[in-house]
Image (cartoon, rainbow, N blue to C red):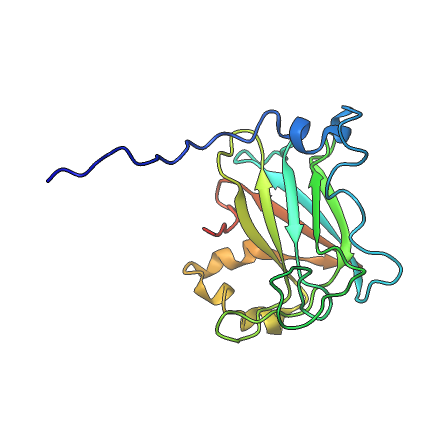
Amino acid sequence: MPQSLDRLKESPSQTAGPYVHIGLTPNFVDIRGVFDTDLGSGPLVNDKTRGERIEIRVRIIDGAGAPIKDALVEIWQADADGLHNSPSELRGTADPNFAGWGRLPTGMDTGECVFRTIKPGRVPFRDGRPMAPHVTFWIVARGINIGLHTRMYFGDEEAANAEDPVLARIEHRHRVETLIAPREGDVYTFDVHLQGERETVFFDI
């Protein structure tokens, strides 16, 4: 017997731009009076936040090697003890002086954004094994229909990275380096390549 086809259908995806900043970071593009400040643009840390202060410099790069100057980047991460600022965190109480989430646009001049945060602690994988310290990224821009998820790992955490259960699942081992940010002083530089030979590993989550 034929099945009824009158069920609700999935809504079609919709590109995030070119109006992503109007909806999410209006102050950045000089549209005033919508929000006092753009959500997620405030400081992640204050003078009471526990942990090592760092900067993460992010560039989103297209297939031709040019920085994308109108992308939007969100990060979320654990605090210095490996706890998330989330109601679903059941292992303990996260640092109340650490936001754990931020949102910034890439700059119109440099194609870069800078998060001033702390180095996160290790979080357990679903089987209990500790993951290496990392920061999760979500990226949207014009032409990207579905937000891209990736992770940034720390270049000075070689031992932890070597035993990370997520990095271990990447089949083409030469691509692991696309998730590793080198450190210079207290600054980590993370270039996200959307296409090309150096394309960053993205996760289907």
